[in-house]
Length: 78
Image 1 (spheres, one colour):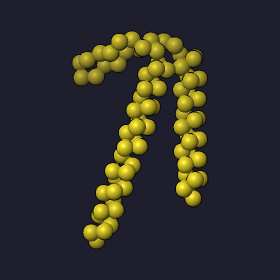
Image 2 (tube, rainbow, N blue to C red):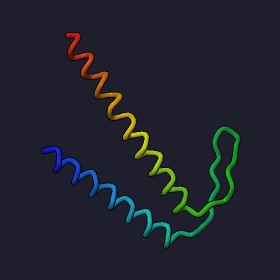
Image 3 (cartoon, rainbow, N blue to C red):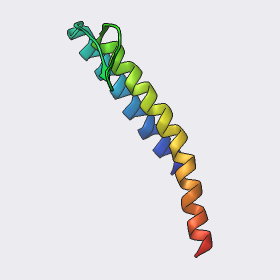
Image 4 (cartoon, rainbow, N blue to C red):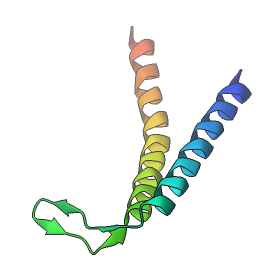
């Protein structure tokens, strides 16, 4: 069962990477990010999407064990 979940996760990541690649090739317009008054340099849309997706995958990989551990601790306390 765990191997099927890993396969589905890999397929989702692969499809997401292909979608970013196709979108970035079609939209090479440079953009800049603005957050709390700060502005980044001009980068292509594909680079911004790839970096955002990479950060999201890393945060998800970190958050999964953290939340599953706290969930197990709550179940053990009951």
